[in-house]
Every structure is written in C-alpha cells, then in structure tokens.
Image (cartoon, rainbow, N blue to C red):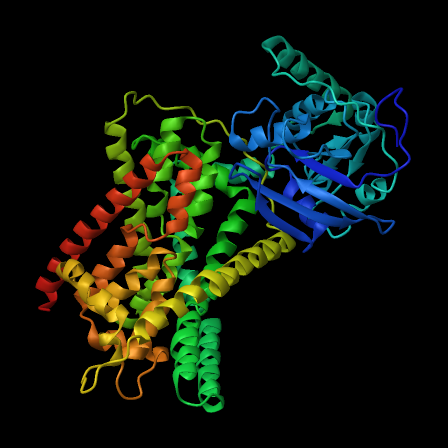
Length: 627
C-alpha cells in the first residue's frame, strides 16, 4: 500500500493507528466496531480531554493498537478537544506518532469532512481515508466514486459502515498491508489564503467524485420541519424529556424489586452463616445495607443513560441545542450550553468537561457554575427513596405515574433554578453581547444497538466501580464510626447514639434542625459529600444500627416514612436539588478552570441556596401539614 509518491514502503504493517475525523462522522461507532469490548477510557496527560484506546484484530489475526482521537473540524484548534487532536497528529504531544492515520469521513457530508482530510494529508504521515456511512449515502441517492476520490486525494479510500458487524472488513484487511515510512512535516496554523485554497480544492474534488440528487427533500429536512419548529419542536422536546423521566420509574420497577429481594436474601444468608457479633454486623448492617442500598438504583441510572445515548446517536441533540438557543439567550447562554447541561443529567463531571466546546469564556464559566443544578443520576437513589416513601404510587389523569410526575417536577425545579442563576450571572457581566451559535446538524439515523450496549456497559461498569471502591470504603468507615465506641453500662438508647457518628450527628443537628433534618440525616450528609448516592447507603447503615426490634436497613422506606414528617422529606428533596454534595464535581471544576476561586464560589452559592430553599420549604410545608 503506497501512500505517498516516491516514498519507499516499509517492511512491516502498522502496529498503531489513530482515527481522525469530524464530530458526528461515525468515528466512535467505527472505533467500537474495531475494538469491541477491548477498549478503555482515560484522560490525556495534563488535561481532562477523554482518551479512548483499544485493541483490534486484523483480517490476518494481528493485534493493532487503535486510538480514537477527539472529534475535530480542523487542525486549527478552537477547543481543548481539537487542540489535543492537533498536538497528537503533529507530534507536539507526548504521544508517539501513529504508524497510520485513518481519516474517517461521512459519505453524506463530504463537503465538510474533506477539509480536515486535506489538512491531515500535509502532515506527511501514512494515511488512509475511511469513507464511512456509505449505506446512508446510498439511501439518500448520493453516489461517491471511491476510485476517483482516492486518485484525487492521493491516498487509499476504503468504504466502511461503522454500525454494521462486517462494515470494517475492508479496513481490517488494509491494516495487514505494509505502510510507507512517515515523513513528518512541520505544521502551522493556515492563513486566510490557505483556507480559501483548501475550500476550492474541496469543491474541485467533490465535483469529480460525488453526485448528489437534485430537487428532492431529504428525510432529515422533512423531520426538521416539525422538530425545529419554534412551537411544535419545543413540544416534542418537552414530551421527550417527560417520557424519559417517566420511564426511569416505570421501566425500572421489576429489576429494582429483583435486586432488593436478592440483597435481602443475601443478608439473611450471611446471618445464618456468620455467627452473631461484630463481623456479622459489619457484613449485614455495614456492607450489605450500605452497598445494597445504592446498587438497587442501577436500573434507573441505566435507563436515564439509555435515553441520553439514544438521543445523541440519533442526531437529535444538536437540533435541541439550536431549538433552545433563543430561550437560553434570555439568560445569557447560547444553545451550545444545552449539550453540556444535558450531559449533567447523567453526571455533572462529564457536563463540566463538555463545556470545552464553548469558545466564549463567560458562557463556559456560567455553564460550569450551573451544571450541578441539573439533576444528575447520583441524586436518583435519594429521590427514588424519598418519593417511594412519601408519594403514593397511583395514576394521575389515567396515564401518568404520580411518582414519575414528582420526579419530573424535581428535574424542572433544577432546570428553572439553573436558568435563574445564569440570569443573575448575566447581570454581572461586563458585556452582555451574545455569541452566535454555529453547529453541524447531522442526518437523522436510528441509534445503533451495538453502540448503545457498549455505552451502557461502560456506564454500568463505572457505577459498579464506584460502588466497589468509594461507596464500599465510605460504608465501612461509616459503620466503624457508628459502632465505636460501645455504649456505656446502663445505656437505654440505641448503641449508635453513643458512637462517634452519633456525636457528630448530634453536633450537626444544631445546624440542620432549622430546616427539619434530624441527627440521622445529618450523619448521612457527611459521607454524601464524596458521592451523593452514598447518602442512601449511609441512611441504611445508620437506621439499621439505630433501629430497635427486628427493623433492618432493608426496611428503610417504611422506617423513614414512619419517623419523618412530610415537611422533612420535602426539605431533604430540595436540599439535593441544590447542595453540591460531590467532591469529584468540585475537583473537575478546579481542573477545567485552573482556579480554586470558582470552586469556592460554586460551593458557597449552592450551599447558601440549599439552606435558604430548605428553610422556606420546611416552614411552608409545616404550616400547611400541621407538622
């Protein structure tokens, strides 16, 4: 395989390849197809940009290292993601240059993709073009002559379909061929004349190699007539979000019940196997009650991720960003903030990291500061526990689940609060001029089941790792604090009242009593600082050790329903709408902004909002319910 005229061919095929391409060109789908489950996710050294790498098996059985570079429209970087990609392919990073650069292009949108290909060709690296999404191009009546395209580009062009099981066979076969020796060329940011020359070259190549149908309205355009409509589009978006939150409760009921039953049965088994004493208490009241109380919410978290991944894979998210651009502009943001904020519904950390695509620094800081107000999946265990305990599971309007409606209301409360904070921050800006929104709208496509499955597997594994590390560690620590020291002789109350945790909880109760929190809740808030979902396991541990009779952590819902007032439950729900109880999020803010200033501002204003909102909620609810 000869990639550069006049360059001698080396004797070995590539051992390390890098995938380069625009966002939404199907590059990640192709990476998943090449590597399957043999991949891992980390960060590039010194930055928070996500790094995905994996191992692929070629047609000849060779192992090839595959690096999935962050999406980029040009090597003239405008974002942190594009800067990482530029540095890797130009040799400016600590990464070794790839043996082969695979430029992934969208066959339905070559006009946009070829600019990056032409820029990459000037780098002097062995290169091949993967003409991806060829199946969609054929459905749209677009004809791409791969032979002509290869001739004009001077590099091999291989057709691929990243969403089909055999869609990368041609590329895998090409990876067994020897490649030309790299002749790296120095790179510089192109001037205006160079950019114009590149655009003219793109048009010339398109005129020779691509034939598009004329006079027909593409399917995506017909769908956009509704989805992008200022009225109907907003209605579609609202219904989509509402159904997503309804599904979190409705679809997860059966697997959650199964996990609860399995946890309870495992606890009983341990009681029969391990003699009564300190070890049994650690296993049953500490580990099983704590970890089991968190892992039961895994189905709800995966359902939420399923919707987000499906909406992203379908091409809907950029359209939602455009749709909300005018609305978000009223509070000083652009539609580009929508995707980071939507990502924050899963977890605020990737939401904060996703703000790197926002070029305007003021918009980026505002988006970072309000990202924790989006109801992340870590809040779901707390919300689900309190809603199940205090909100009856009945149907509203003959269709909707009341518990799902309440959950949706909490999400809306967080969104409205975030917009209010953004509006206030807008008042303090030196300049209130809006930055224009420019984004690519990819063609609609059905979400690929393989990609969805890999995405859910990755999220589930991350959650289980958190359960097995942070949550397990904190659960054991909390059990220790709740068990020692032992109660003195003649003590009449539960043992936990005399422990270190009881002492801490009694001290914090003076601070939180005005907003309705008892000492058990106060204790649970402390480990909840590491991860919000730990609070549920902490409550399970605290109540298991403070209960009398046969009460155990598995009966946490009826326990709190019988011992808390509705005003306390509502106050705790509001607390979790605002309180930044996640040290990992604050650490991500420090990494992204490079300053502790924004960390302290975020923590301070969110705690203040949480306390004020809880005080109002508790007083109003107490007055209305009489206690």
